[in-house]
Image (cartoon, rainbow, N blue to C red):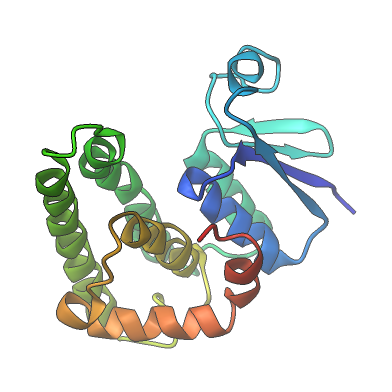
Length: 204
């Protein structure tokens, strides 16, 4: 049986999705938390090919770049879609992570308390925009048991592990307002497939 190690900081960020996949898959894995004072040395080590985290080790072999890591794990554990069209939907969701970061990073990094409310509101507005689009997509796809019908996939993991992380950052969960059906899906996932991940590895 393969041994997995996920190296990432003690935050949700880009580490949340692979942590959720590994927890759901019930494999033997280690959640290696990198401390900030360790990072300068680790960044220049053989662990980090491109000087970024997360890095996944599988039996000593290293995998990097979060999109590649997430889809690698999803394919390994049968969490991709049934068709190329399904996989388009999955990739489409995954690539919004960087779009979110464009708006959220200024708020997270801001040290000027007079500017933070405006930056937070911009992040919230963008969050609502994306949730409304995800809601429409989910409804157009048939509003099934999962985002892609009857198959639990990486799309569902992203909606809980990544999207809820962005909601947490601005302490805003606008699903009743702009994504009621999506909110119901996320609540089901929180109580079932992703309950263990949220209890053990999602950082509150």
